[in-house]
Image (tube, rainbow, N blue to C red; front, top):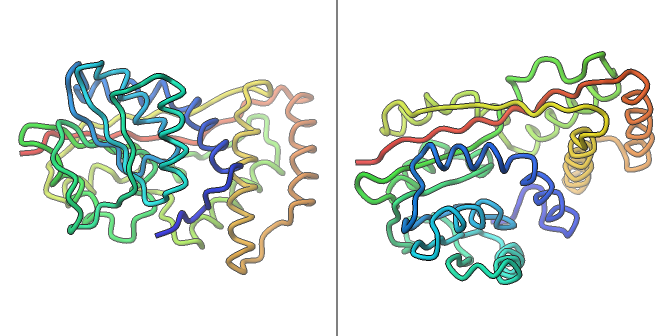
Length: 269
């Protein structure tokens, strides 16, 4: 299975910038879900390793974190980052959640921005929950693009249109962008009961880097869409729009709103 949005160096950099924005919320969710010293944690769809690296710091030297990802290039990149950070309690391996794959059981299983890519969401949640020890915790952190109504204030039409086009393109690539808005129902349908749930909107002004992050999102999504034969804005057009957005953002003192991120967690067994 390959990443829908690719594994280029540009994408790895985007993931790490994304992690900086979402690290505080992810930390709060993991702490609320009960992450503590000595725990064994599984990070599914580990990507560049940011969630696993964060969890490794939270469980301490007596704990252990395993990050699995379906892309070997991501696994190698994440392992190199762990070594650079001198974290010897976190490991990465190539793998998926296929029923035939033996991963063991863990005190907590977490996935961030991974359920959104699954064609069988409920089956995926159930499989992840099967890797949780009795009394342990399952955690998913997913985007809720459909929760955000106002992207800019005062409005920058070019930015709002860019985000709308990006979300439509993500959907055409086969990704359900509204999963975060329905995590409660998904947990219940998967047989886990009603989860605790929390959400956060990213907001920022012209200097926050938030608009640049979403422009990066658009760039990599549109690039992948072009490879899939979809009609999307070209690179030159995107660069022109990005320059216009940055100019208007400073002149209008714009606040950028969103995306929204939703976290849900529940005990298993």
